[in-house]
Image 1 (cartoon, one colour):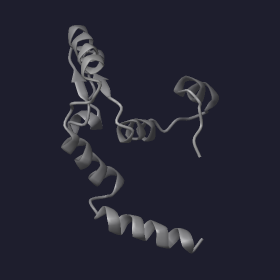
Image 2 (image 1 turned 30 degrees about the horizontal axis):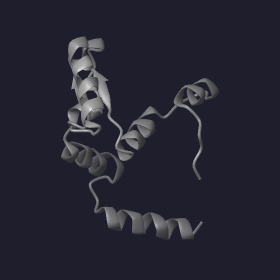
Image 3 (image 1 turned 30 degrees about the vertical axis):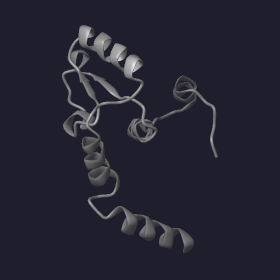
Image 4 (image 1 turned 180 degrees about the vertical axis):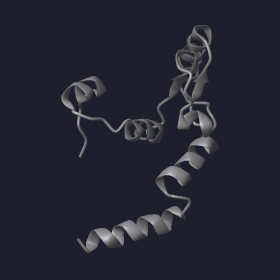
Length: 109
């Protein structure tokens, strides 16, 4: 099932929000994730895994947006995203075994 609800509407509607889920889904959908490091002293898990654009300045933000518009694709390190998914989502397990386990347990409900 797919819904056409903007993230802004979702945030206004909700009492709480699972931001990590939204960001992971955006990456799964091949969307660009830009972390504005110059706006925060904190690191994100996406930076730690090299799964996002780590933007250090407003000028770099402008250049990155221009590059994304021109190239119409993400060019961050996909292996970083794969490592993030393997550790955070799949808990370092084989993906096929993970889904077989989940499927088996769902059938028992």
